[in-house]
Image (cartoon, rainbow, N blue to C red; front, top):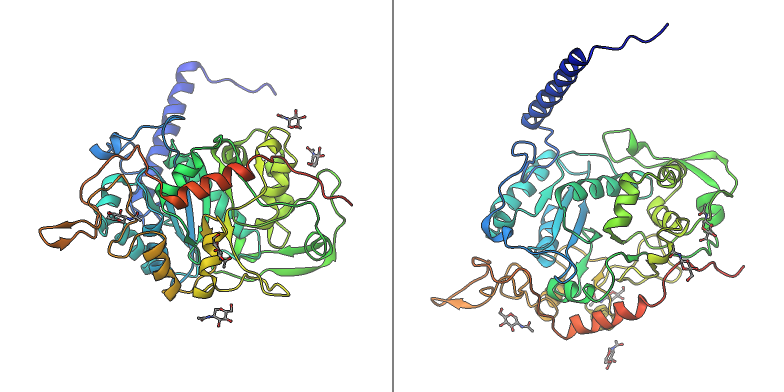
Length: 417
Ligand SMILES: *[C@@H]1O[C@H](CO)[C@@H](O)[C@H](O)[C@H]1NC(C)=O
Ligand SMILES: *[C@@H]1O[C@H](CO)[C@@H](O)[C@H](O)[C@H]1NC(C)=O
Ligand SMILES: *[C@@H]1O[C@H](CO)[C@@H](O)[C@H](O)[C@H]1NC(C)=O
Ligand SMILES: *[C@@H]1O[C@H](CO)[C@@H](O)[C@H](O)[C@H]1NC(C)=O
Ligand SMILES: *[C@@H]1O[C@H](CO)[C@@H](O)[C@H](O)[C@H]1NC(C)=O
């Protein structure tokens, strides 16, 4: 039977009816409790007018770069996430906060409320969003990867200007100010990807890649531990597996390739790694090293500081004051893991971030932070300085040298076998 074609005018009507339905669905979903973003829901105001200070932002290669932070936590992490947000806040950046299904809806709402009310700067620049969905995540399974890809897609949509995506968890803390970090990153091409990787799989070949797991957090409402299958599988020969640190700094173009790319490899690998344990340690590594367009933009380092036990456990050791000097000397940008309100975080606030008497980390963007006005300490930013400039300290210079140095070697070397 020949398919009947609608006359053009009818087709147009059908199309506009479909559009109308879509619009209706959109509007009704924005008023439901499952708003995609909680702090500044985008669906109610499709293009919110930019607040005056944010409208003065300038972008491009001659300006400091901009970072998009994906910060994830679980039940009970809202306070730590807020502390971390303050420690990495800068108006040029974008932030997406996520509490997984281990947190109650009330905690997620309270986090969004804090973002709306606690800092005048967050209200002014509206660059912090909170994921409204409570989806389950198990960090040993591919649900952790699904969460990061979701975060990347939302950040691409919400922030048209950022240059790099940085993944952090509630257990992380910065070692430098954002002025230092943006300054250091302005010295390298913006298409570089900082991904710690190796093709030397060692014991992981058998334990991770030949085994098959199922991650129920992909289809259950609660965080659920993966199930190990009795079946095993052969190592793939259509691509070479790379593995490394799950903490990443991805360029915007590589993030777009992962989320919207027309190449089939991002999806093929997603299917393969759906059944691999700790896929966050292999997906991006394998994808970038097997992509001829991006392989040469890979820098082998994640700019994180952590300490492993001997023999290493599943997680790096919890850091304390005894690690302070080594952390500083490491030239890393972030360190993990820390316990909530650990005294060493206070030391980092005082000595590294200059945050002893203020809430947000001082920078050129807010000259009044920490200054006394009418004999009261100003602990919140109330007046905006120049958000298109940064002033680095010695830590920024050191980080810039370090990043330039490690960026000289690019690409994915194959381990000698
Ligand atoms: C996968 O990666 C290896 C090593 O980088 C490379 O030699 C190979 O060509 C890649 N495969 C594809 C399909 O690009
Ligand atoms: C990547 O680097 C290699 C070695 O330097 C070079 O041969 C190749 O042409 C580069 N590929 C791209 C896409 O730039
Ligand atoms: C710091 O952690 C190490 C182990 O990681 C421990 O041996 C040491 O006692 C801790 N120091 C303090 C001051 O808590
Ligand atoms: C850190 O670096 C300083 C200066 O280079 C050095 O004096 C100090 O011993 C180093 N500390 C540690 C713990 O490595
Ligand atoms: C710390 O912040 C205060 C107040 O903004 C500023 O005057 C001072 O120069 C800063 N110190 C450092 C080391 O950045």
